[in-house]
Image 1 (cartoon, rainbow, N blue to C red):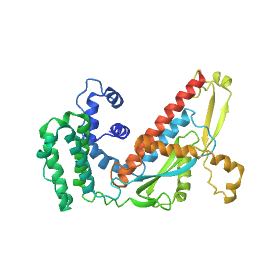
Image 2: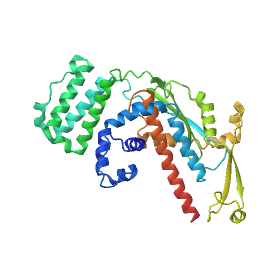
Image 3: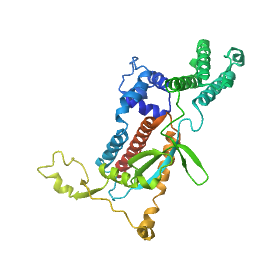
Image 4: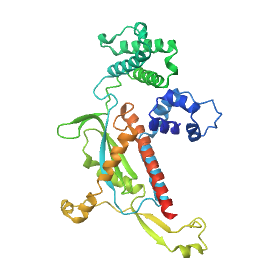
Amino acid sequence: MFKYLLLKSYFKLSDRGLIERTETDLLFKYFLGYSPEDTRLINPSLLTVFRRERLKDEENNLMDKLINKTASLALEKGLIEVKNKIIVDSTHTNAMFHHISPREELIRQAKELRKSIYKIDKTMHDKMPKKRESSGLLEDQIEYTKDLLDVVKEDGRFTVLPGIKEQIDLLEETMNDTEIELEYSKDQDAKVGHKTADTSFFGYKTHIAITPERIITAATITTGEKHDGKELINLIEKSKKNGTQVECYYFDVEKCKHCPFKDGCYKDGARSKTYNVKIKDDTHIKHMDYMETEEFKNLYKERYKIEAKNAELKNNYNYGNANTCGKLGITIQEATTLFLANMKRIIKLNEEKNKNIK
């Protein structure tokens, strides 16, 4: 079920669109463990239940578990050069509906769907249900959305067109979520934050720490108004727990080859052998005058790496906007997004490492 969420996050699909694509996409089937001829897949509604019920118990440690797993994997493969150094910054994510209501979101999606249909058949104007936007009631807009979906589905022509089919599925998914939670846009967890003195956003902040190799070692989620600096110590402590602050011991591989205890320790053909030991010492806050030293200035030159990581999360994974409502929803979105970003980076670093060895 979690693999389904990774595919949904990476390819930006609705639940129904995800299951339908899995029926024919061999890449999806391979990733999920299906054989090519398998046709009995899960019902899309199970994904909603999984997110709201199963992952609810994991809200507080889901993200930490996934980051810990990827950081450990990067260390195991020797992809992180232990320098006792991390880079910290935050990026903002707009709440799903920003400052608009769920009614306005349903109106927007319904309008986009109608426009797509009219491009194919202008005569559909006369078949559409009567709009109820003037009443201002969410319940009326939900009823209109149901009627609209009924008309479009009954026609039959549009549900076989991939682009329009995905619009239909997303509108239906938004309507179902809105019915369950009529206060959908009144996201009690989201708050107004400021990117600059003149610009603001409504949503959340994700505070992340990365290594110079751009592997994410820790992350926290706060509401939009929280100050970045207060998360620093928490990010450092989480990074240490994930094993990125260690002492590294190097061994003579020629001796390792003939060591009687090499089984499970040294792999035949390896060109180097290291052993990492986690350091559990306390974090000491540096004095402000440290910022004037050459060491700090050299470190600051690497800040661009975390700016690039933030841009990657937003541009490649659409992390600038929440795809669901509430703290649980944004936690699941962040956990899957950061996991995917780390795995992609690990694969790339591992390929570069193997190429250099050859």
